[in-house]
Image (cartoon, rainbow, N blue to C red; front, side):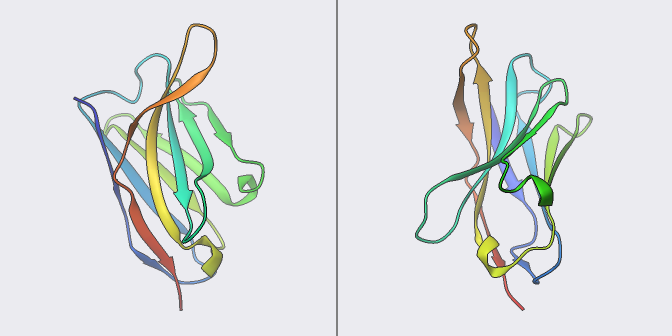
Length: 123
């Protein structure tokens, strides 16, 4: 059974880089047709898709965050990593990793979510 677990520091200072890791168990991040997304939810706001890395290693980013976001992976550790630079208090949110699958017709649907991890940006 596939499970996703986010990990990383819960407190980051303004202007620093936020770094989180998603560890996948019960499956491989290189499995065909899967994309590994990062989503966040600031307090009182909705979910925001940040970006994803695909099963062949290609990356995709939200235009609003692309300039500050980098997603990578370590296939030997079955992990994806999110880096968000130059953070401000507005980046305070619960951060989730998610496994998405692309259908035969090209549409993408979420399949598994991590439990989420709280990250607070504060001095």
